Length: 395
Image 1 (cartoon, rainbow, N blue to C red):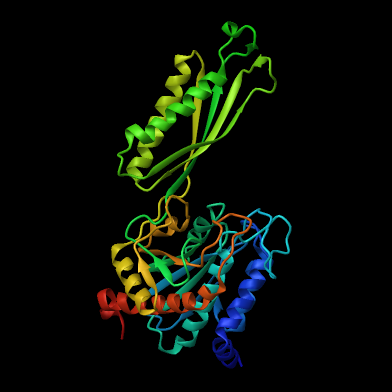
Image 2 (tube, rainbow, N blue to C red):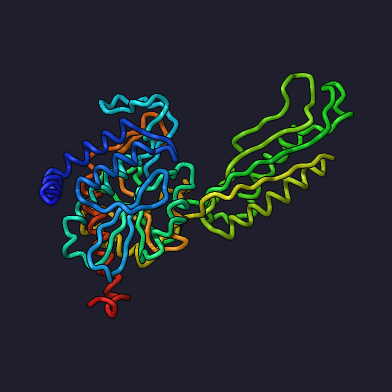
């Protein structure tokens, strides 16, 4: 019977979750291609008799454990995609897929939230609401959260919580703070047009490389002169193209890069100043330039109420809770927080190479307690919501 299977899983939960983690690590899949990963998670959930919701998703899934149908609804989210990186660790369970690797810990996230689902399922009979478990595709491509939201499956959710590991903190450390935990991430392209000429006769042309060089150096003054020194923002030009030989001034040049911000007003200011600078500098040299702005995910935005609550539960679970964030990395969990209050929480997984590094590793000792924490967080959040908002709805 399924209940006996669930009890067996929970009795051996640490070993079960480590095995799941290793299998997931061995079999990475890229964003929106997570077909086998999705099926593996479905099989594990079905084994524990956890309901999987029927949604129009190619990859990823949402499962739920429903207690009192009149109670509140809480969601816990993890991500499931890997990266196009060739693994260079010596792990006995290293990636079996050449050129792909779970180098950001999403395999760890899945194992943790699967464990939380098992623990919540065990208490289903006394559960005072519903807990939804989101196994989200496409976090690295920053479009997975929007795909989940578009299904409407979270329209009834009262609070949402997300997990991410950090590779510069020991096991047992938890990080959380009110406001932005991660940055808004935007990409830009700049197309510069001049007039090509022989390199020996620059006066006959308009050099787009000179224009590009001036744009690159001038853009850095936005951070140093338009943003207050106590604010956090980043502007990096990461890609330059121009010309294809040594004795020809080309007709065009190309720049590409990223902007990272924590404040929406600063985000808009940078876009405005970039547009002014790009066009103005190009015109000053007699050329032209176009800024193409690609808006990415916004900054995460932790609700003060849920930060305080998550901190309380974290301390009860034995975590050393600190007011720290991930910095200027991006996270599409922010799309959920535009609609649903909640908290994005980071947990230490041991000192390692940084995320997205081919030798990145996770300490497996972090898995079990993280699962227990998120189960306690979900169940506790249901009670917290009832205490504050739902007493009149529960019979």
